[in-house]
Image 1: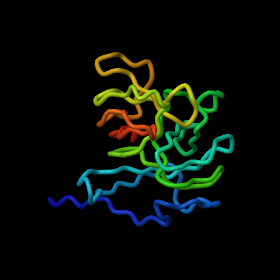
Image 2: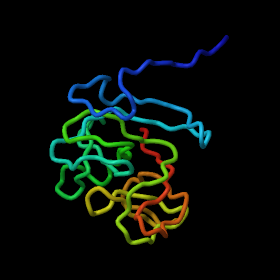
Image 3: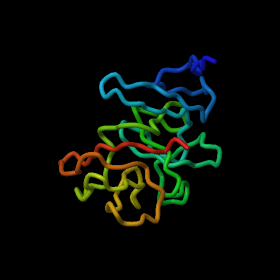
Length: 168
């Protein structure tokens, strides 16, 4: 018996920034990255009204239980740090609809600037809005990981490469 892959045509571009939902909020999109030959997973979401605008590499957390609305606001109780959703892949304005990356390799996830994230560390939503921090490899985390660091955070641009793991 042959198994056919599930194929879906999406109405929106990955870089979309739309006032109205062009696809079903919460839907997942799987794509093969031609550069890394790895699978990347994206989720169609709305950016919460209390959030700051989203840029490439900015981490977000879920604001709702249905995984349709995300926010960069981790401190004000809008999102729990245990609800990592993924990272921005382009510009997404407040209250607009667009795609975030929730699985696979992302080269420039924004950090809190401590330059203390080592390869293999769990990367978590930080206590500061719109950035990540880490839990040392081998240490139990009190927060659900956004993903795992694949290169040490030693650069001045306050980003780190992460293998994201927020699909489900």
